[in-house]
Image (cartoon, rainbow, N blue to C red; front, side, top):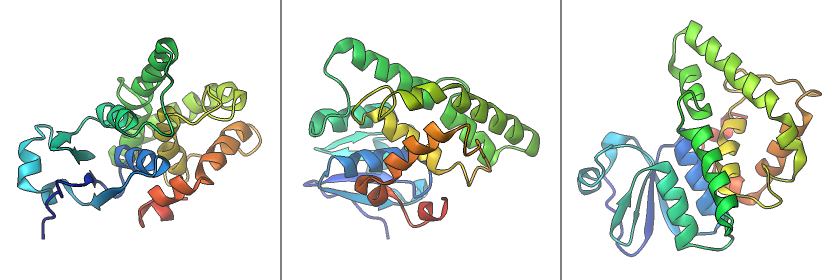
Length: 210
């Protein structure tokens, strides 16, 4: 049975295992948003929502009669609509820096989200190449993971919400960064994984990834 959106609630149509949906669920849990989260396949989405989503992709957010379907748009909308706790800085320079990091990790060519998708769906050769590239990229940024409590910040931001789903999937992706060499990454990841909001964001299948 298809589940129609409740006009009075904030409804997230979510994939139970894809990183984009996981990041949005993490943000919604961190902000303690009153919400409906419906985990499904794209072909199970209500027709009236699909008609307003030309990309026909998940995650898709329904709120106040609007249908939003781009990851960055959804995340920034939620931060504006539900401002506490803030997950983007007020300062325009700092905010622009966070936006660039989000673009770099989730949308740029050969971004980390794309690499994960290649590891999961590509042939052995392309998957191995993507796994090597992602591992190298993470190792290169070890100093940034060690520098502050969160990624280049003393407070959690949308950037951390985007990174957490990747780090949670490392074991599933057969990526071992090394316990000693990558200790700052593991410490950072464990700080995120220990948050109640992160635990709440996990679907049943995601709980088995780590």
